[in-house]
Amino acid sequence: MKSQHLPSQTSRDRELAGRFDGALDWVVTAEHMRAIEGHLFEHGMPVAALMEKVAGRIAAWITATFPRQQYAQVGVIAGPGHNGGDALVVARELAAQGYRVQVCSPINRQKPLTAEHRRFVDYLGLTVVEGMSDLAPSDLLIDGLFGFGLERPLEGAIAAVVEAVNAADCPVVSIDLPSGLHTDTGAVLGTAVQATHTLCLGLWKRACVQDQALAYLGQPHLIDFDIPPAAIAAVLDPLPPVRRVTTATVRAKLPLPRQPNTHKYRVGHLLLVAGSRPYAGAALLTALGARASGVGMLTVAVPESLRLMVVAQMPEALVVGCPETDNGAIAQLPDDLDLSRYDAIACGPGLSRSAMNPVQAVLNSAVPLLLDADGLNLLAEQGATTTLASRSAPTVITPHRGEFERLFPGTLGDALDAGSAAQAAAEHSGAMVLLKGACTAIAHPDGTLWYVPESTPALARGGSGDLLTGLIGGLLAQGDTSLAAAVDAAVVGAWWHSQAARAAAGDRTVLGVDGTQLAHYLNPTLAQVLA
Image 1 (cartoon, one colour):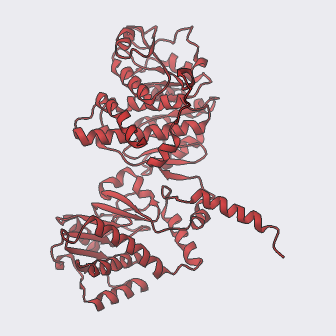
Image 2 (tube, rainbow, N blue to C red; image 1 turned 30 degrees about the horizontal axis):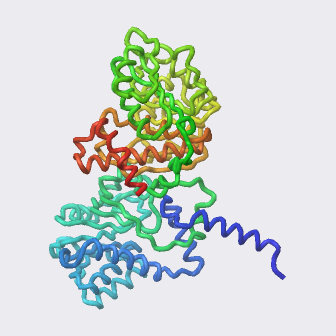
Image 3 (cartoon, helix red, strand yellow; image 1 turned 60 degrees about the horizontal axis):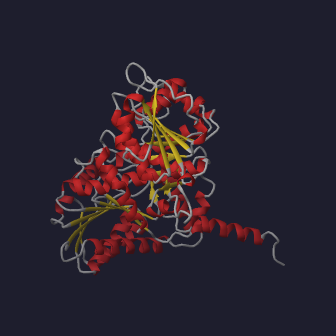
């Protein structure tokens, strides 16, 4: 007789499999990855079989990316653990493909499976040396010293091996992570390999989305080895999702397609509160970002002295001139400006510290709100956590690290993982927190975390953040009034903004991407995504 609980368990299994099917954008810690692999081994996957499969995928990637005709001489550095075992299998497979392979094995004591692969490499007649100085000059180096889970600093002879790898005049491919990086924080443990490419295995490791790791990762790539969804679910299902934003994510979250019979009042009305006499350009750049978002209607509230300038530059916008202070800031929003008629409000760029009244007005509204720049600085003076928690509508805040520290003193501190700090701030404030950086972190109050790791130094320019505010604000106005929709707007806007900057830098170099140029790349970049 069948158990009456079996059907519900099967249904649950299917639900989990659906949630984690194709979960290649999930980001894990060393503890999570250990547990997932342990689940596989517990359910019958032989360690040796998994190593063969993973190494086969790595070897296939290498042969496709570095053809033997151009990269005939390959040096493989194999460590004592299973990362070294992967490297030894890769060495064997490359040798079978006709590459001239030499192995550097600087540590004699090895895990049993790695030692077995070392014996077979010896049997095949591959040259194995103990020091990097004994390797012939290589066209390509493969770093298999240490993978995920490293905790201790690299010192002495091993540190010297890493330094020799970094001094080599050839590409370097690191298996799973560059040796010497902490898996979760991306911190350098003494010294670390500076890879040209990093082949992250199975699931993205947290180090791959950390600012401080970028100089060591080179170009990161995910090597999928078909982890069953059930194994991922067994470890990650109880936890808030931590994910990496991808093109597929953005396509699914864009406010598209639009209904054929829609009109401008159905696709969002954004109120933008920005600018002051000293920072007039901030209002224009933010409006350009909003324009690119496709929002149906845009109203821009600026100091009266800037009204005609904004009208001339943004003829499609409704421009509201506001009473201003002696130093050219918005003194207050006009009495007849009904905030409830807008689908979203974006506030902050270029306001100056003299614009407390308009910031307080938008905080008191029951409309989805994005705060940036001086809006955040003025919010910090009121006490961010208490003020944000009292709002009845979703709030998105987009601080850089300095603004974040003013908003949530002591939360960030010396933390290496910006995502964890953003999660803590979101949980305590009830706001959606987008913490800007080379790897931007986007945190929901329920613990869900997104990373946008693909960026460019071209964004290190004044005005780029103003465009982001307008872009996310316009997307926010096109969604519903839920916090989930606010997260979608932030995820799409941050990724879209970074991809446009990458495209612009490709055409104009990282030195040639100012705010106006970046605005010109927003819509062509989206067109390529949709194509």
